[in-house]
Amino acid sequence: MNSIAQQLKARFEKAFTAAFGESYAGADPMLAAASNPNFGDFQCNAAMSLGKKLGKPPRAIASTIIENLDIADICETPEIAGPGFINLKLKPAYLESQISEIAADSRLGIEPAKTPQTIAIDFSSPNIAKEMHVGHLRSTIIGDAIARTLEFLGHDVLRINHIGDWGTQFGMLIAYLREVHPEALTTADALDLGDLVAFYRQAKQRFDTDETFKETARQEVVKLQAGAEDTRRAWKLLCDQSRREFQVIYDLLDIKLTERGESFYNPLLPAVVEDLTNLGLLVESDGAKCVFVDGFTNKEGEPLPLIVQKTDGGYNYATTDLAAVRYRIQKDGAKRLIYVTDSGQANHFAQVFAVARKAGWIPEDVEIVHVPFGLVLGEDGKKSKTRSGDTVRLQDLLDEAIVRARKDLEERLVREERQETEEFIANVAHVVGLSAVKYADLSQNRASNYTFSYDKMLALQGNTAPYMLYVCARVQGIARKGEIDFENLDASAKVILQSDAELVLAKHLLQFSEVINAVSGDLLPNRICQYLFELSQKYNQFYEQCPVLEAEEPLRTSRLILCDLTARTLKLGLELLGIKVLERM
Image 1: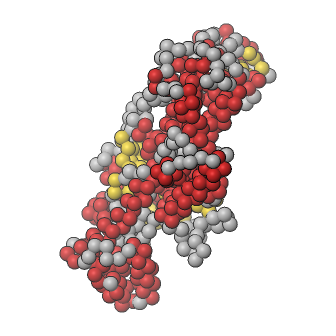
Image 2: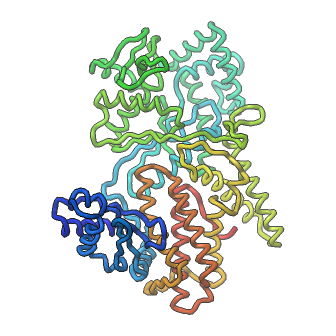
C-alpha cells in the first residue's frame, strides 16, 4: 500500500491539474510533515512557488488548490496559514482503516519493488593471513543491513566478499614460512591464525629491509601465478585456514556472504589492460601503464593517474576492481553496484568508476555507488586500539560484549530476585551483547566516526538495542499475562483511536514503509534505527497512558492490535538490521 505521503501527493497532483491545467500535472506539492502538531500532520508549501509562476497571491493559490482538492476521506477540512501554507490534519477514521490494513498484512504494508533488480554489494572483505579486526566491523554489518533491506524489497542481492587472497603478501609469507615453519605450507592448521599473523608481520619486515628476501618473495609470487603445485598448495592451505576463522565471526554475527576474492578475478586482468589499450586510454608513465581521468590531481595539483599495470608487469587493486566492475555488470547482470568500504578509499573508487565509465563499461541503466563509513574510535577519541597499540581483534570485541551483557543481566536478576536457567542467561547475553554492538554502529550516520562504548550500547535506556528488545519483550509480557494469542486476534475487530497516545503511535506505525523505501535509496541504515527508537518511545507513552488488558471491549482488542503491530514492526525493523528479538529479558 502507498504511504500516507504518497496518497496525499497523488491527490494534490490531481488538484493542480484541475485548478491550473495539464501543464501543472507534475508540479511538486512540496509536502512535508508539520513541524508543530498544533498545525496538523502535514503541510503543503507549493502555493508560494506556484504563485510566482501564475502571478497570483499565494493565499489565493492555496484557496484555489483547496477548492479542487479531494481529500475528505483522508483529512479534516484543510486550513490556510501564514502566506499560503496548507495545513492538513489526518482523520482518526482514516488512520483506523490504515492501521487495520497493515495489521492484516504480513509485510506491514510495505510493497515489494515494482522493478526488482540484481544488485551486487561488495562488503566485509578481510585479508587472508590477517585476523578480522574492529575495522572490519562496520563494512560487515552496514553491508549486511543494506543487503537485508534490499532483499526484503524483492531485489536479487549478490552479497560479495572480495577478500584479499592474492598478490605480493603471499609471496612474502610463503617465502618466510619455508624458512621458519615449512610444515605450515604442507599441513592444515599447523599454526594458529594468531601465529600466522605474527609471521606475516615478520615477513613484511624482512621484505622491506632485505633485498635478497624480497627477490625470493617475488619469485614465489611468480610461481603462484604460474600455478606451481607446491606454492599453490601452500596458498590454498593458508586461505582455507583464514576462511574458517572468518566463518566463526560470520556465524556469530549471522552474516551470509559469497566469497569472490582477488584470485577470482586474476584470470580476467590481462583482458582489462588489453581492452584499455585498444580503446586508446592507456598511457605509459615511469614504466607503468596508467589511465588519466579529468578531475583527479595529487597534492601538487598534477594530474593523478590510475595505475593498472605496474612497471614490473604486475597488477594491483585498481586492475582487480576494474575487472570486478566488468564481471558484475556483464556476467552477473547487476544493475546496481554498491561498495561498502571506509571513507579513506573514496578517491580510489571514484577513480576506478571514472575509468570504467570512460571505457564504456558502465551502461546508462547501471548505478554504481561507494558507501563510505568513518572510523570506530576508542573512548579517548582516538582510533580504537588495544593497550599494546594493536588494532582490536573483532573476535575479542564481540566476546567482551557478550561477557558484559551477561554480567548486566546477572546483576539485574539479583536485584529483581529472579531465578533463570543457564540456557536462558546464556541466550539473552548472546543476543543482547551482539545486538548492542551492531545497533550502536548502525544507529550512527555511517559517514561519521563513532565512539565505541560498551556501557552506552548495553544501556536499557536511550537509543540502544537493549531498549528496543525490552519493548518487544514488554509486548510479549502482555500476551503472557493476559493469555493472549496475538496471531488469533479477532480479524474483524475495529481499530479505535481515541487518545492522543493512540493517535501518535498509529501515525508513526504508518511511516515505516517510507523509512524502508528511503533506506533502499540512500543506503543509510541509521534511518531505521531512529525510526525504531521513536517507535519504542511512542509505544512506551501509549503503554503508560492507555490500559490494555484492563480496558473494556472493543477498546481492549483495539489496543492489543496496536501492541502486536508495534512488536511486529520492531521485529521486522530489527531483522533488517541483523538483530534478533527476545520474548523475555
